[in-house]
Amino acid sequence: MRTITWNTEAQCLTYIDQTRLPAELVTVETQSVTRLADGIRRLEVRGAPALGIAGGYGVALSCFSHQNEKAGQAFCHAVETDAAFLRATRPTAVNLGWGINRVLQTALPEETPEAAFDAALREAQAIEEEDIALCHRIGANGATLLPDTCTVLTHCNAGALACVEWGTALGVIRSAVEAGKNISVLSCETRPLNQGSRLTAYELQADGIPVKTIPDSAAAHLMRRGMIDAVIVGADRITPDAVFNKIGTYMHAVCADHHKIPFYVAAPYSTLDLSQTEADITIEERARNELAICGDRQLMPDGVDVVNPAFDATPLSLVTAIITDKGIFRQPYSELAKQDERVEP
Image (cartoon, rainbow, N blue to C red; front, side, top):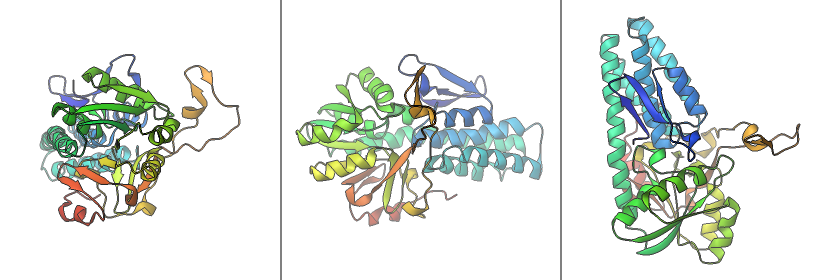
């Protein structure tokens, strides 16, 4: 099953609701931009590549919903308004805006709303198919970096659920296993929403890849004991000076550097944002209840506020290599810019 795709028969977007995993596998079907935006905010669909695909399909949904009610400049304005609404749902992840912009630039020059929808859908479907191919290239490139037998630490979820069906960080692990390497994984739980324990462990167990979940705070201890050979994470945005990824990534990078353990970032080229620096990026702040409540249980006293950033920034000086679909890049990372083909906001 693909994480996110278009249902041609029902003319709607279909995606796995990741908030329901691992207890149950539930899919959402929608023709509504508002419903998709709500799903993105709630992390029903998440992960940088999947957000890029969702952004592209969001433009297609907008074109579909407005094609019989508006034309000309009114149609373009309505679609652009929907696109801005979608883009604002996750300000830190660059792929969301990249997917939106790419499909907008394909659809809006069309002469009729119907043609715009057809063009938008084709382009969004192309992004989906490209994601599968490029994730396999990322996996093949990264697999060469791992020893024949090793234990890999990963943080959050950068697997099939964050993409379409292979993954970035987990794609490297899958490709290494496919190549015959003996890989085991330590999956950080990734508080406060437990994407590591809920999603990464779920994926790896389904694939038969040995995995154990650890508390986020146990990683440094296990590094010191020699139980971790490499760290591989994904990325939501890569600027010329930093990697933005799930909160806690920077902590793992500092600890890996101290213990002389390679720290790898696996991401598609669409995650690059070479026009900005760390200082320019807004880090998303999440709701208090993510920390204060677990199910029906209150975890904090009323009136105590929280600081709950969704992401942190890891300086590139702490990154051993960036694994992309276009190759492996190392410090000083000057070669990254030479092949950048992103569609700028």
